[in-house]
Image (cartoon, rainbow, N blue to C red; front, side, top):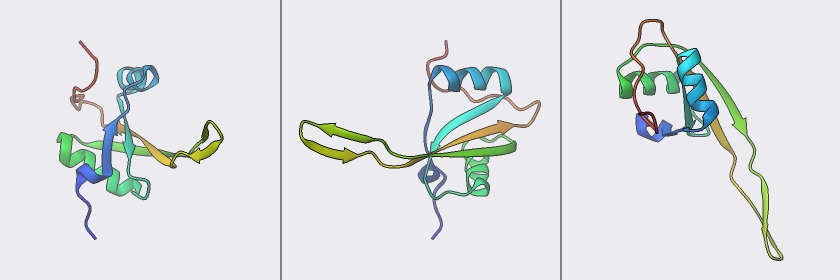
Length: 98
């Protein structure tokens, strides 16, 4: 099954750490589909933002246990991707930057 780039890249992570990495290390941070591979993430970023990607690093976060009153629940596991752009590439604009 062929996935759309928008199915792979679910949303950008706009936090202090994410924006700091974007400015200092020329790296984008995304919440991605949990079963996406690094090569799929790389091609999705290149198609959506029209930039060249140098490397992709991923991290899987396990869902936390949550409770509401007496009932217990669990958040779903999710995956984060750090996408480093090649030197000289223009950084895409998104988020709370002014």
